[in-house]
Image (cartoon, rainbow, N blue to C red; front, side, top):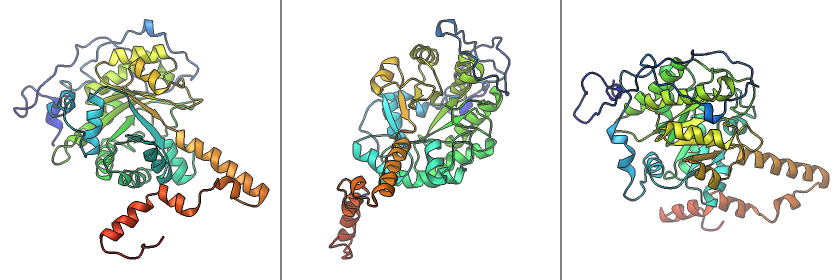
Length: 377
């Protein structure tokens, strides 16, 4: 199967594949698949000693695809392909800022504000599409359909999308990658929670074994490398084990994910700046993503603070849907109390609203094609 050769063998599968040896085996703490009490404190950063990746978990040799080496994305104009563009942004100076969007309106507002990367939050998508909490209720179809719409608004802007656990075993993880890529998504993250997962900032999380997590990452990488023509799609490995098994284990799992081919490492719920810094140092040179949710487990780092700490991507998962709850709730309460929406509209008439949704672009296209339906709007 295409992509398998890039994990290495005794001889390279082709002349362009370089083999990178995995770290030597070393004793490691036992793998776990059952959560321990949530209140277990993480060890301090200074005490973290991360063992080498044993060959029983790592691929025979660590994954390496020379075509996707970051040095290949350092120069040249930004690509029109969103996945390629995201790789260019990761390889070059500066932090990638991706606000969480939950629907077409929030995506339009983010683009209007000038953001050059978007994040399709699983929690926000579940809330927006289904009106449900982030408790493994949304399906692959829900996520893909939302992504198709978001990615169509500006196909050059990279969209990083939550893919939860990959929605099943290796075959389903692979199907998730191919469907996300076809939808126009630039990157996804796969996590190590059990299938009945929950938002990473809730208590009571459980994680699968290291072996199952690595299998998920490998399946995602193989699926990406099997896309005809050579895809630049970015695979992000996420661990939720910090609150369950401690920071040592979380860093260890991300090292495994990196050796399995993850392009970016995502540690969920890191509680302090020092712990974030130690994580970034332990995983270097792999870029690290940090997720900031106001009131969540992670401190409310600003974009500049996260960049100074060494993070390469910062996402604000609930920025749009929390704002929507506040704004819509206030509008509904005002309507209920006053009997009119005049105050909540704040002077925005229908045409002004549709302008935010791309009215002028649609009218222009119709006119260029010879249409006359929208000469007057």
